Image (tube, rainbow, N blue to C red; front, side, top):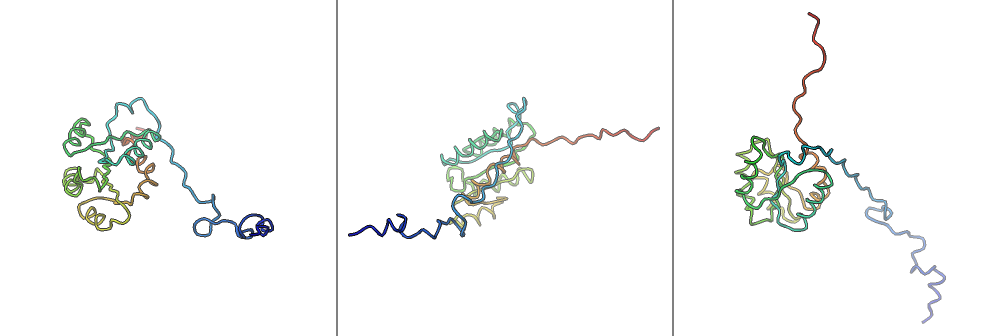
Length: 186
């Protein structure tokens, strides 16, 4: 067989006039990647400050991903396995309620569909509860929303938005500042 035709075509199997394309007709390597949010400032009280984010995650991939992202964002995240663990950790925070609780809705050991309504009634609106599932688990997503989950994300969307979620919920609540402007003259 004579392979001289490849030499004439530039050895590209006939694709000389068609540059490779990525998704939606975009050239490869030119996809939009949102910038990472700025990490929270590291303060001397951050080590002693109460934990504001708890996660019921036993999937090692997501556990590592959350830990690494939290480290980069200077946010403290604690992983818990049971409701009792969570209550003990919240008790250590004093009156501070967590800002965010993350559930891997496939974590059967945590029993998320029975625990979410209990947590929602106890913590009220002070705490957001976010769950994540595989994109094909529509029924589980609906059940979690009915149970009281504030937001249920597919695993991919959770991964993409993790830094923003941790930054938003990991920042300490600011005390109301008193006005520094002088009052009217007496």
